[in-house]
Amino acid sequence: MKYLRRPVDVTAECRLLSLVATVACSAPDAERHAAASGGHPGLGGGGSGAEGASAGFAGAAAGAGSGGGGGADRPACELPGSFQWTGSTPLIEPVSDATHDLVAVKDPTVVRFNDRWHVYASSVTTSGVYGMIYTSFADWAEASSAPFYYMDRTPGFDTYVAAPQLFYFAPQNKWYLVFQSGPPMYSTADDPGDPTQWTRPAPFYASTPALVTQHGGWLDFWVACDADFCHLFFSNDDGRWYKSKTALGRFPSGFDEPVVVMEDPEAGRLFEGCNVYKVSGTNQYLALIEAFDATSNWRRYFRSWTAQSLDGPWLPLRDSGAAPFAGATNVVFEGAPWTNDISHGELIRAGYDQTLAIDACNLQFLFQGFDPAADTSNYNGIPWKLGLLSHSP
Image (tube, rainbow, N blue to C red; front, side, top):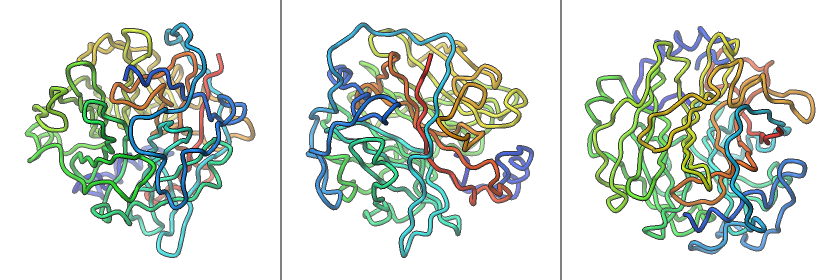
């Protein structure tokens, strides 16, 4: 995501994006709770019911309970050397009401908890106002009919908020929602299924770090933790990927000065929308960053890297539009292709805690895309919607 994330020269940003045809301006214990349960038919298995839900988003029972059963334990899988995906039809599309006239839903985060999927995402109105929504359902087949809760109804969220990340922080027995409101912000709750109860947003930093000021801003924040530290990754649409960290026991306070993790002279090749995960049952981490360049015909796709530590070094896995982690060249849709862009999303996790474990035996990716025939002259008017990729080797 690359919009109103900070005070920007919007005209200058539009000039940059207009060069791109498709983006013209504008816990260890939890690892066993496999995300496969409740999958979309044909995209990861059948659902498991709605026992955890109650009317009016009253929640799915607080605490660190079951995140959805995954069946018997099985040997861990290594990441494949290449990827081929099957894409669903659009599963989550903009839903409006009398006070929220939405044109887009995008930048999703998703966890499986108490036999339900919990999705938070950015929303964009027809007038270009950004906010967030929450939706929940037992099975992906129900996603298209699940109601939205508009987060501006929760105290403190009636302002610019976008690009959420949701996880359970086991050391504190709390859920965290990380997002951008200019700077990186967080909110906590006892139950991810009750969006009315998030605390008022608080900043990770008391002031903007010097490196961020020097490079003009920051966006798309992502927290991943190991046994000792929590790492805050972010981008700036400038060809650099950044990181800071704090001791696990100090989180969410104590983040140090950010450093540049990697950089590319071509800004679009190291753009935004990063995700970092632990590959369950291995010593490997996976990083994804959204990109666009000549190798993808300027369409959005994801590059990927692996490392043995969250501190790196990060080694390329699949990192071009011709050989992407996920992009137009390696996605086959169930029906007619409805997007040429595989953009900002999240892998379905094997659990829901701060380690962000994924099951390489069952890779699925909730992503944003849009109709290639849509008018992209105003970036804030692009009709983003969400679909699901399932790895199909």
